[in-house]
Image (cartoon, rainbow, N blue to C red; front, side):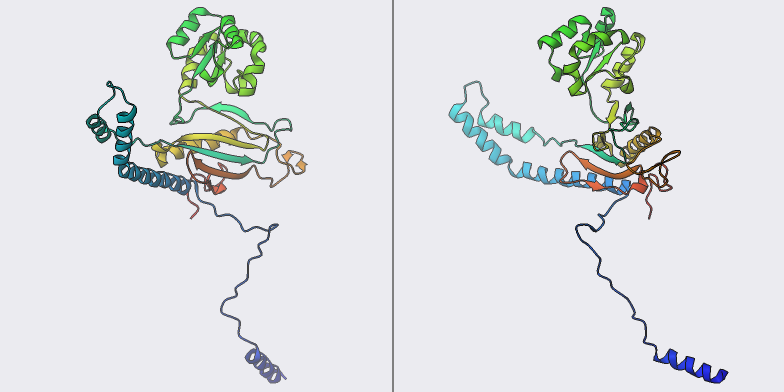
Length: 327
């Protein structure tokens, strides 16, 4: 009996069709099931953006050199037709063009971080400030509100665009001091009731002093905070879609310095993570288990044609691949 079973089993094995060497399935891609977008580790994404910057620089430098003669001829013809005796001659125009070099634009690098937050819910609207290890490459004009006139004079001497108390508030009301002349404000606590009269002017522009941004300081700390604000301390806040957009430096920083700035940024965002976030059902301890805090992250520069989608594993401080290459 066992011999019969053994023979039958051998026949079945021989009759069974051979498995194909490789199976190829067509991916199921529709509008409801789009194909996943390619992502890049943070270091590769930064290197790609910096390489694109170099390519744009070389392309524009070549155009600058190729069109130099054309620019000289156009300017010489214009000065010959409409110039005055005090204007430079054609020889001086050519000498100036030969000495003048192409000036490279130092583009800014920006991170757009989409978080699983609903700013309309309490506790999910993030806002704060922090210092990047290498700065963000920007300088800001700061207005200081204080009723101490000696302190106001010191603030002006240290680079403040405007400083003062009630007189400065009146100048802003009357338009004598333009709101576009400064990008940030500082105030001592006793000045806050007086600032309510211009809150409608400062608030929509994001210029109202706020304790979350550390822009309300005692008088003995105003000058130190003024220096920090001028040197480019970074402010962040979530928009209505839960996205944080913040500059992390300039292209001239290089990959290593930009990586340090990204590391500091992500540690800051992780440190202010709300206990309850997301749109799913909440558990007893806050958010439901498995709810993602980081949804997407994009890197872009001032003149890049698009953005680079970053692999979230490489920028999530809780990941084992944080600031490294998973491969």
